[in-house]
Image 1: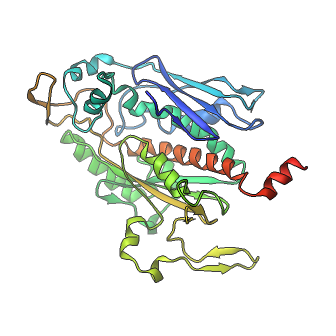
Image 2: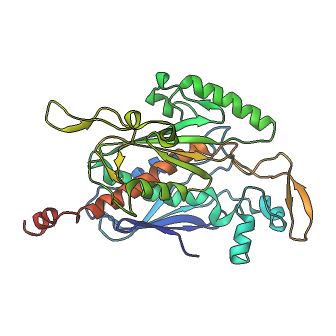
Image 3: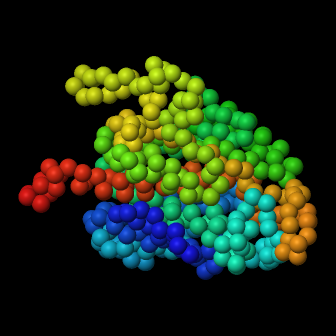
Length: 367
């Protein structure tokens, strides 16, 4: 299986299956001298681990990270950082029944068509548990960016029909409710909606928004490796993502040039800024120095207990009710996954940008 690696300079390779011994990641290309410990990684993994509320799977995993290489005396050595999280609460028997049929909304059918074989225990590599490696690698990338004054604010913008009110935005609320919504009233309505979904054996989708501050102007390439294109590729690689937009996104299609363009101005310190940010911090595929803003749309969790129609390998049309432990909404646990993929993308592109100007190369080698 190819396609388990991401990045060019700052590169990760994830490995492992949902019901195997464990899952993990190898991070290559991290500069030496970055202060890093297991606690830095664990803080990120704790944001995605299961069992945190009634709106997540009841699978009980501590998701304790173990760093195997690449760290010495609290700093990265410049060699690959290898990390593992052991699986401790996998119940493969819960999935034995699905070996004979294809679950609606899952990758069962496409895996069989591609490989002629699939690991049906929780989805194998297509399981959301694969994102542990992304988050562990993303935690290192975020740590790197933090040293440069680049910070993330990522949260759930909507769940089903419930959307946060910009007038009630409170960043503190993101970590004070189970749904990672920065609007307490909206979080309450969303919980009521999810309770209704659960009573009906159903699930919900939602939208995650990410704001990145402190990114300098000039990051990204103007043709195929545009910063927004790279972010889209990274976010679309997350299972269940069905849509992506930056800035005004699809709303820009109904705007005019006068309402969509961001006017430039000089501030009191003589620095160039923008009066608005309809572009979402990216112009021509290159960061413009303002906050980068993007959103990702997630489909409803496909594993639901309500009866669905499908087919089995005996050529029969059948009806199924999915058993096992599943999230009625994946969006809250995906917040840190989106943030991690953005951090990985930005770190990789910033390292690549160091060779964009001769002046930068000369200042480094002629010092």
